Length: 267
Image (cartoon, rainbow, N blue to C red; front, side, top):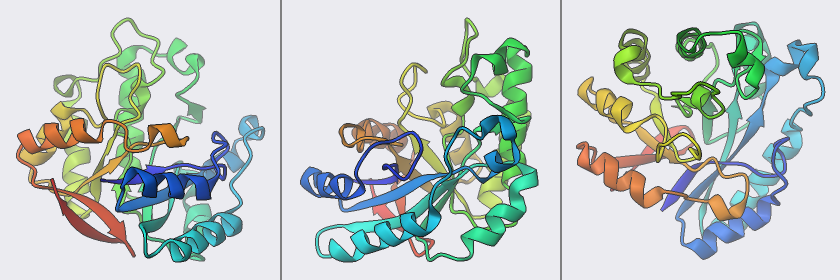
């Protein structure tokens, strides 16, 4: 087992000690864990989000790099980061990411039209189609950022806190933009993340099996698995279910990342 998307106390929304996270991964039998804490550079441009503390990048990369060396004989530790997106923040990410040696960078959309789609207010002022299409457009725009990234995180994130009676994001309803997203991921050689932090969505993971199937039909092969764990007891959540589902879809491998190179792990 392995996990390419986890968080520790370096993220504003976790209290997990990073060394305890790595030690638990060893106890659980993982061969690889990437610690990919939140870097929300775009929020520094939005005063209304000033209450959210920014990650200390120097400390994060120093600590995770130290753990990588300390436990190298027991587990592979990926030095990672999860970047948010807003077009106006491209320069912030470009300038800061080049300062550090990393194994994996996740490209994730959380902020849409200058709002956090975890908040009910995002949905209150939009129809479902408006809210979901704006999210998908932001995902598509994020694929063209000028800085390096390896995988595209949790496509479907917008449904996690959706307030509509029917929260589903069905491929058929957004096939045009989803196909554009998937084709672009493939053409750029990026990976599609299967994120099992999906409580309340009715899914075992995101992107949904339906969207993952379409990715396969379009020629996509690179898949990563991430639990998005913010505490140890969620590490590798639904890993077996994800493997079972994607194997049935015809995929043979999941991929972990070392020095930004995809390493195949047979399912």
